[in-house]
Structure formats: structure tokens, C-alpha cells
Image (tube, rainbow, N blue to C red; front, side, top):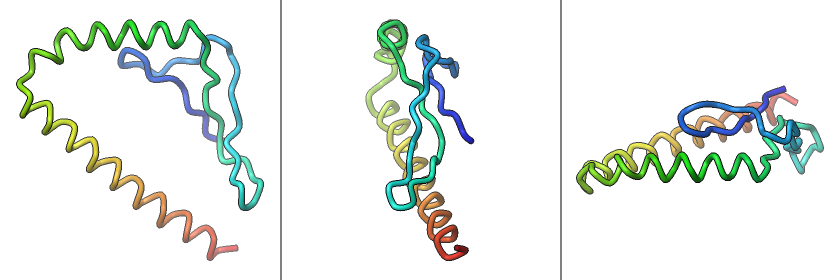
Length: 94
């Protein structure tokens, strides 16, 4: 089963709570994976990392930042399509 950790300051980290929440497919009731149940410490670390990253991010010209964000959007759409196709394939294989 796949476990999704926190991504804080460029690293995948276990939640400070040590707990995970199951992600359940509502149609079948099957557990697809687990996501980190983050706590206050995780949130504080993420906020601090974001504040630190913003110091250098703001020095990048706006058009270049926009290019990065559009590329992230493109990659997310691509991943969404792949996951959609995979879920259709799994439905037909049943």
C-alpha cells in the first residue's frame, strides 16, 4: 500500500504524529493508500520552510516564476490524465 509523506523543505518526512489516514475509494470501499496525518509541528515546519524559500523565490523575475508555475500545472494535468486512464483500465479489468 502506498504511503504519502509530508514534503517539507525539499524532503519527504514522516508526520510528527506518527499517524496516517487511509484513503478509501468510495465506489468500492477499498483502501488506495494512506496520507500523513500532520500535526502542529509539521505545519510550523512547513510554514517556516515556505518563509525561507520565499526570500530567494522573490528575487526571480515574475515572468520566469510564471514559467515554472505553468510547467507545474502542465505536469499535474499530465499525471491526472495518466491516473484517469489507469483507473478506467482497472475498472474494465474487473
